[in-house]
Image: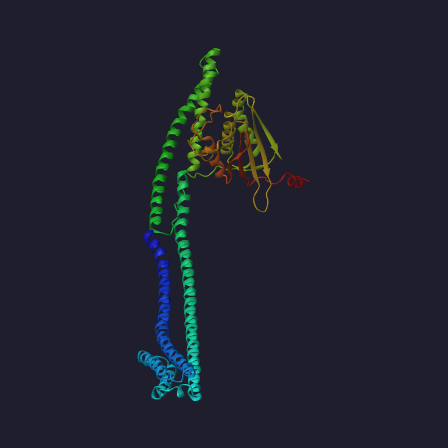
Length: 498
């Protein structure tokens, strides 16, 4: 699946869940509104009508009480008080006609009030209005009306409490459902985001590592296939195609360099022999000035032969040609040969070159001694070339004993007091044909093969070559696993000899 559908899926699924949560909220709000509307229609609207009916009944009761009080004061006030009671009764009848849907008990109490008022209207005298029976009936109706209204208010209160509980239940369910859906949406979003990130970052990490290897010239290992989005799969295919083309070009380049180097090596060897014959006087005795010129030519010829030999050795190692291992090679003999080869150059530059032998000097192992000597000579030459007069180059040899986790190994540290390696070029110093010369270093810019060849030799032996940084100067550590020969620790060899 391509990236756009994945992103669309990552957005649409949580959005759908959120929309469901919003829909749930709207449904809950609708139910709450419906419950409140039902309360308003069924209870509050009828309550308003019943309240007016109760008010009319109460006005009639008040008119009857006032009639009794006025009759007590003035026995001739019967017709006037009856007229007031009749007016209140007429208002109650009108309200009853408008409140047909009122509570039956309240309507019954209103009818009883009208019957009592009708008795007073039929005998408009103060005798009936002030009689104990009439007042007792009125008091009973007053109590009845009050009790009915109190019960009606209690019922309304219960109805409101019930609706409130229902609204609270709906709100609680809505809140719980909404939070649950939001949690589900968050979980889905995190899961989809994590899956989408992994489908992009994991292949990108693999492709980045592969691109870095290609940039560093490591063209042997193919670009691994990746999953994830289709764009990255296509990019991996293009990167592998590019690696194949670069490998072909690198093979052609190595072949061309090897051919040119081989063609140069033969005439250079003949030139070296000719210069040696001249220096020996085979063509006649030479003057001191002529000998000096021949010496300069011989030095230049030797440098060119070393360069051509390095190119050929590097090409052979990078082509996968196996090492020419010799059995039980003296390690210290190889190191001394490399030191003797570079000592004249160190003396000429005024650099102190000495060795520090740590441990037994009779250790032997199966090695390609020519390649190892060449690699050590390159490391020593590099250290001498960056040093100035009066500085030192120290070669330290250690034999690391074998353990259960790793075999015995040769460790050679080449330490100089030069300007050191800047961090900016640290990752490129082992690349072939890449040269850097610090401004404070007396080293001439060369071809850039010494450190590259030394690392290839270490890798071919199953070892390593690494730069160890320090405050001043540099330390190059060459590590070679020792197999075959006598590679035991000195104490073990002493015990066997005893």
